[in-house]
Image (cartoon, rainbow, N blue to C red; front, top):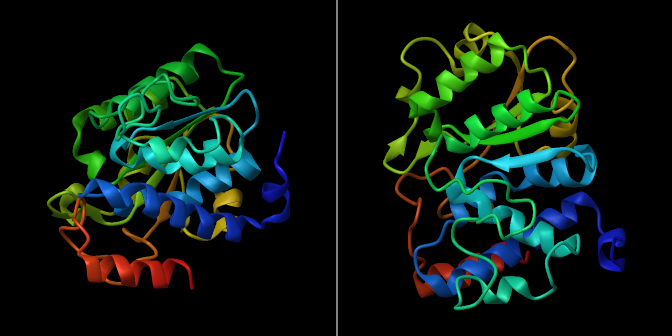
Length: 259
């Protein structure tokens, strides 16, 4: 059942609130995965509030950003209210990397590329259930990603829908060299996938892009995002993957996120 606060909020308002909640959750713990989580927030909101059916599965293969789902789970009542206050605390439910004890977490994805393979296997096992999988562009350095892409196309897994959180940054810098030749779009098309493209922060474009029109091939949506969305001093910057906020930056972040 949806709570009263949830009914009254627009999806845009939810995104603003969830960014604030993520920021406050991460702040006491030093190096923060906020940049990775914030870049894919709208993707998860579009999925959970507009696109996902009860039988569908959502796997966040970019495990370093999986905590983006925590405020959504709390908002939907899938975890107890106040769970985010126990983040990374002894006995707390929520961890840096999501674990199967957390609702909606079907596979732990600390190792990049693993979640995508599991998603493909789930889609293969039950063709009547859609499986959505969030990938990071840095994750696409993993050979297992392309092995899975080839396998999924071979078996025509039209119920497998990947979303690339395409923020152009990885742990050690920009991901421009992730694709040896051609564009990311060309790369996925060459593996036999239907490819869509949109802004990863436009909720309605995401909803439209997450509705494939072909029924014979897997689909990927290249969602162009901004790493550290919401913090001007970190947005689209290198070397902020697990950066530590200074007191001055924390104060500025609160001004920007609450604006």
